[in-house]
Length: 304
Image 1 (spheres, rainbow, N blue to C red):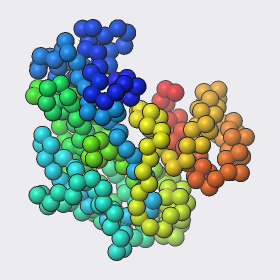
Image 2 (cartoon, one colour; image 1 turned 90 degrees about the vertical axis):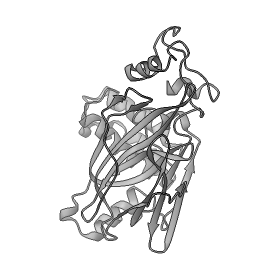
Image 3 (cartoon, rainbow, N blue to C red; image 1 turned 60 degrees about the vertical axis):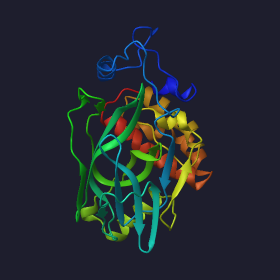
Image 4 (cartoon, rainbow, N blue to C red; image 1 turned 45 degrees about the vertical axis):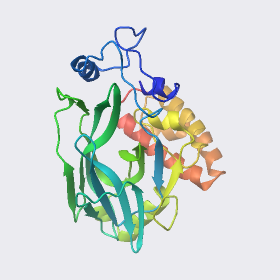
């Protein structure tokens, strides 16, 4: 459905199941929602061309994250503030009708150990649907914050569809935030891949600086709009340098032709990596981040 929306104009109605030719754009929960509101013969649409209207890549690790809460057919996160020293960078709507939630990180080791998130797609009016984060749990060694509550995945019998709860654990940094109608709806996560319990604080900070935030020294964001189709679908990632996507295809082909295993991945793409190493430092960092993403795909035995 997302791909069909992106190639059409905003407010395009996806073909309803009754008239759809070929693959249906709707899952069982969406069909149940349409049936409940007499929309099965009409279909659903969204106000934007994709759910990810924009992607913001964070440029340095925050020491605190403040979540602003609003009401969009129930509580949801409407804005985020990234705080580091005396610098505060804000995105979204900074509503304080509800007290904001603040999640603090240790400056010498600003990593997140666990992230849980659930999103909600709801019928806003007529046959138009919108999306929001309805539950978020952030956990570090020194702090924990919980917004919202977990709902049973699927159609709630009224006007909302809840996703499965997404869970990430490890030594995590938030490297990007995806927005829909100025609301945060997705997070891009990087796992440092270092054993922090046996690593000096400087080692952790170096890993964060060099492989996550491109060597920037001030918290902020870079707006990414150039590759909307690629960052929209499934488990894709967003990068600061579009040159990485050509290498992405090369790496994917290498994985497809190997057993696959992580040991065989790098030798199969060594030429591609060498070309990147002769180029822009942003592309080098993007390749390294992408390589970890592919490793995750292999470990989880996902289909390519």
